[in-house]
Length: 331
Image (tube, rainbow, N blue to C red; front, side):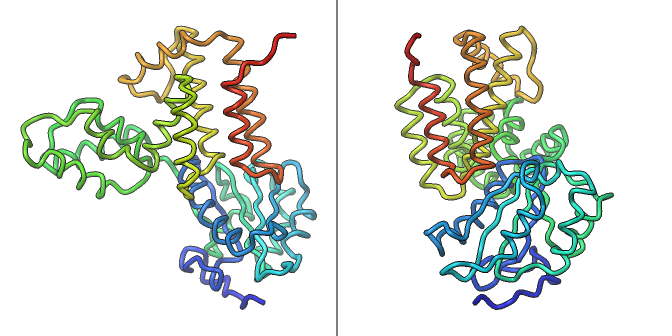
């Protein structure tokens, strides 16, 4: 049996291994890509140690009552050293529905890794206060977009780089909340021979967008351009990168779909860099309202299945892609 962990030291101070993991993680924030990448690391650790799937359970806090979730968390692992239990949409619960979890947070089962997830944190609620006090709370915030762009401008100028006006916006989209240092080193190497010329968005994408979020954005472009071959080729690469999350990518696809709806309605979509508006406008004109509705319904259903069923998320995602590209027979 796994040795009991000292939960008072907190999740942030414990290296994540099968011998030393935190019994509880609270993953919250409005950056789904970063949040689900962290979840992906945890899931890979536990499912890799127990490929049978007998000790991995997923719940939606809005659909499963606390006693069901806690029963799963209190259960002993079967033919393994630990159980892995995920609970999404925890932030949607009111204080009364969160109260049953308080006793568990104070004394969690050391042979279970229980992960609570959501987009927002309400520190007026005892649940979130206790998560923070015990060191279990991890925040994944996108931050203020304008502030992030201003920071990137200063960093680029400090590095001695000249750049096109749209470069900071692109870097925000590609990097999110990640550290800028590695990206700046790549860009400085790229322009080392010619610091007088301006850094273009094409150069940024080639230097920074070749992995991580960049690969995701390329995939999303292929999907909405309806390039079936490239989309599925890129999907295979994303699946090989174990840090990628189907749920996070579904969220990004939904964001792009919303942008197309705005543009098809002759409105400017919020949060979209100006240099992308022309390209997205062309994509929007290629969709009918019926197709946009069908894609929205498919994304909603895939998101629900990934979050609240035992279905393998990547299989759900592949089915989603097929629903986009396969023409349905006319009745």
